[in-house]
Image 1 (cartoon, helix red, strand yellow):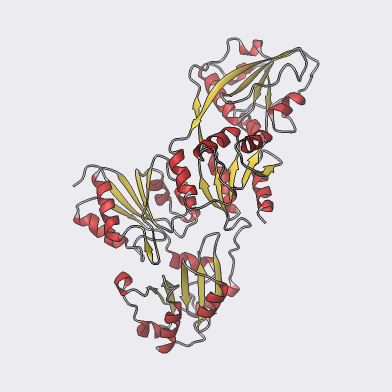
Image 2 (cartoon, one colour):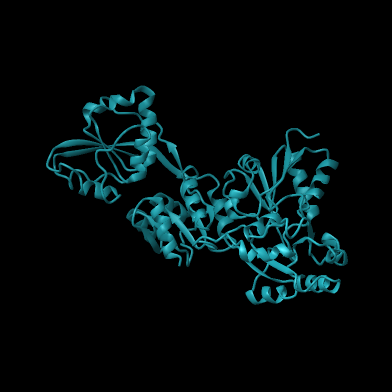
Length: 496
């Protein structure tokens, strides 16, 4: 028996991360090695830790990146090395997923494994197309079968027997063989007028489905230019797809969007984009670290009249330092200014209200709109190591003096280069979204200081846009507000 290694044979569901099980997500976020298949979306992989080794072992019709014996050997090698291995498959690992063969190999080797079921596409795709597999009035029997035409891969289906079944047939991997499937079923006695449906990319933002009859389905699929991956449903319930159609892909359906915020900040933006149908890949370019040696200036409440925060990161790191040796109330009469609603919200989580937030969410606007510009005073700018100094006192009256307290630093995210390759090698995404100039600068370095031709970029804030242009890119969208909801709404309009 090995020392510590284990393999989790896990189903990722039909593609939407929201349809993964909690157990699958837990393992995904703690695995050392992830061996994944072709149908695992970038949105799912982006939830994995950046330090995890990701190995593609996908298979497409007519093209195998890695043969099954090689996959088995790879799994065994990783488990024997003491790794926590996630064998991640689309759908369910034991439903036409060859998970049984991998479990046999692990058992014969005396290695530990666990099976984590997933929602198989044969259930998810019809459900998202409005097709109940069972219905008291139409069908109390469901048969799952592979339509693959290669006996060595999956065994030959007994179409004579299947044609006699009075229920629902759910056919996997039958796209290329659809004309023969239709011909065989009809030839063995199935009514040509039997309702039949074809669901491509079921339960994902790219879903397309049609309802026809067993006789007309092949021609309808060809006419609509549908293809794999797809599920075919044959039976009376298939006709309900027209009546119960409920799923409507969002306005960003089919759009591949890359978000570049830190891993901690990405989740909300990812959720907003996925709610609109986008496939989201995370590319954390920077990490926020504590600034070595940072400390609160002595006598701060009496020494400075204002604290100015230009980012939520500055709020979090400053207050962490402050609360190590102070009570929050001891800030006393110091007034607080914040750039942008996200920064103000971060302060609000500590019960601190802002005295001033500029209408335009930039440091330059803060100085330009500064209140009481004729009065003298002192300002402490709390920021990161890459922040530009506030343009006091020139723009706000000679009486104002500004100090600077650097409480965090920005560094390149771990495994950013590997993640960059994973995202960009398959092809150019539809959009890349930037929320800071630092992220743009790190992206430019990863791209070899040559901006990918044709890459559409969206930004928050003029400083971010300037950084994109300086790196040789084009700003296709600059959000009119720093609020993420506004960015996503304007991205929808720009994608039409």
